[in-house]
Image 1: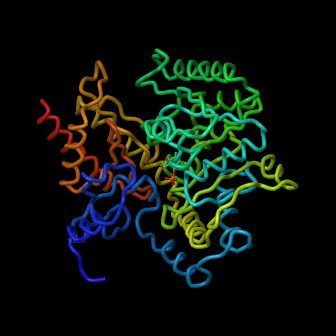
Image 2 (image 1 turned 135 degrees about the horizontal axis):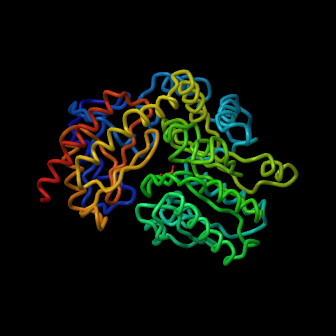
Image 3 (image 1 turned 90 degrees about the vertical axis):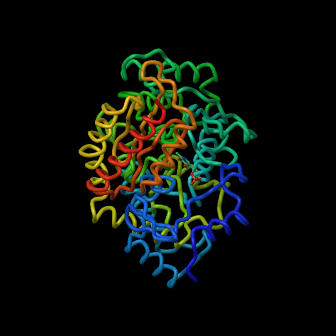
Length: 444
Ligand code: PLP
């Protein structure tokens, strides 16, 4: 390919590409030509520290050589194969995924991405319980296919609501509590009481599944308070409702765990085991699109003598599978999940707290691993969110200084790759500090 300028690339894009979730007429996408580790660059060599991991998916960083090599090797060996055949990479990928999930699940159904993983988890829950309704949280995102978007608990659901049986409830979010709670314990207890009432009011015998992001991501990295996940598990178990944990964003290292639900949310490690787990993104860092559903033996064996009425041409596509095998192997060999946890505990948590101490605009910071949100407010007392203009100006100031941020509503999500180094964290936090100072002064 001949050399191109940023404006040529953006011009070509604007002429022919229709973008996700956007008003097409006002788009000005950033041109990205390449990347390595936690850095990306444009067509004119300008470099950006990637604190977005793109769409929170490049957990292993950009262009990990072992993963690129595995995809190349798989492409040379067998670039595609139908899902009904057995192929080595698919079995190896499923085995590794089940292994890092801790032994509670027996099979994996592979999908093309996260949304169809959620669709199929819902389908499995409906078929095995014989019930219809799905309860999910306001402030959640589950994907953009029919049932996944109806399960979503934010504005993206409203223009797309055409599938049946979806009921929403409020999950815990102490900073903007729906329950007048003043401590994490109170928030947890009251959110559980609210869910209990929703289940009773909907009729437990009509509910197939409770679907939750273990740590709601797009909604603001809402780390569940002590006892909440355990309480949801108890409620669902009591009523024979399947618990689906959506780990599309929080899984595979992001929250400093292989799967976030295996972490300690106040009840000790491995204290909550769902019936179904959805994953995508970090499973192979998005090098080739892939997602899937892990299921317990009870669910998998329900289809031993009955047809599973679902399928995809590219379920378990060999290039995606080769990338999964190489990603998990590299993450193990390089202790990438442990590294993400340490970077979170030792660098991001104290660094972000220091930023909060220095900037009145920061109302709260929360997260774990390499999964953090900075919530920006006009006034710490009223907690009124900063305006979209302030967010736009922060974003452009950060880009000008060489940091690619992930912004949502009134928040900056600090979501670098799991392999981010302490020096890169220090640089990213310094750039955030500078941008918050510049924008804070302009807003005064
Ligand atoms: N579930 C969660 C928790 C997500 O964050 C996302 C995407 O951001 C999805 C599902 C949908 O995944 P995909 O965009 O790969 O379909």
